[in-house]
Length: 251
Length: 334
Image 1 (cartoon, rainbow over the protein chains, first blue to last red):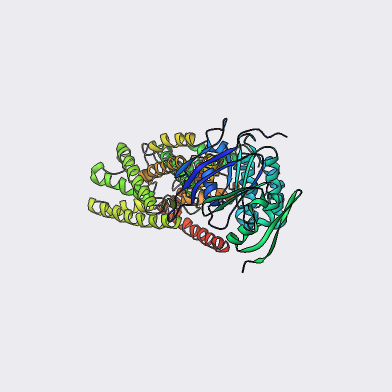
Image 2 (image 1 turned 90 degrees about the vertical axis):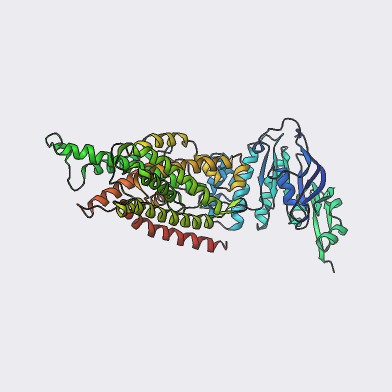
């Protein structure tokens, strides 16, 4: 399958914050159709970047280039799972997915893809934290699937947090399927042991700056793991993935 | 669901017609439909007393329940009610101000128009003030909104009392009318403002269901789906304020109806807002017709103010909802 459609180019983007800038002069070209991981320690600016890319926040400097053919309404060019969800209304899980504008059948299919169809009729507020997160993930995937693969982007802010391995795997597989048909997929995650083998490219943010962008083994070097995460370890690239090897905390 | 297109609307319509018929026929002097032709005393009772009053009860009940459903959706809180948010208090103060300026007794025909206008202004001011006071940063703080509403309501109630006392004759009686609400002063012109506004409102809001559903996601995530959150808020608050003000202008403050009806509907028909507003209008009309019937019959030939009755029912219901909400948020650790 050939990937058509333009990359998303971030050019000199800065975002000011209350005390210090959240993003500083960030430039990167994000290709579509690839599994992109947004990595960085806490407070590196991952959520800020996703906010800017999603149109929630206007950058204080710099521009985004979406490429030709991008629809004007933001809702038709991106789907976004923010880090926190505010919903408290007693919708069923399937109804929450339906808020993306899909029918009941389709909503159930999206729940099934993430392995939570059994909870489709349960009131959302009575679900556990991890399951609620998966319901929103299904809603955002439903929105993404309504966009054209040549223009659609999906931004996901820590969908793996609080998930067990099976559900985390389901989420990563779902994102992989979208990337394979040409959607732009950018996933922010702290679960590097799960996300690095999944990722084709990693954008590493440090202190609001773009530190590196490239293949996981090239970006997550032992030096960077030590400096920015305080661990001794390295990433072993292999055919079809690889693994993160941790030898302990950096003394 | 027998009718997936509009769940419950048929059943609610039947209940409404039943309640409307009962309101016409029952009372201190019961009327028999088959005897109407022979009984010359029956016609004036039906035509001059029961019919305008039943019409008013239906319209006021529908308006308050619709306003309540809208406010609960917009504030994302099942505890919202026009009377709790200060909207009713502001409307009552506005109406009372015009009346005390000499628009005359409420019974005097066309006075209903300036009174309704003043009620709307008063309600708008109260809403603006309550939302302003309940704001934390750019977000509405719901407990702040509710507390500000209680404070504004109390202030407005005191203002109404003062105006009525100063106005002199019948002061105390009018205070009771405003603060507890009553349909006893119904005449043929009093349903007029709502008779025009309510159908227009139902028409305007008929496609709001999906938007109100998406709105429950929170401002940010609703906007991610393309919802114009600010517009929904402004239009919804305006409609809810207008309906409440027009209801208060002709019937005083009838509390808790806007709280109970939408919450009952959530239990019967589920959480979706798709048909919530017409459902609320029908159910609110039915409930106020029945409540007013009780208010006329319980102590006949004397009457209870119907707002006292709804408060007696609604107060415990509110406390029960509050307890439930508190135990939920405790379970969430929120």
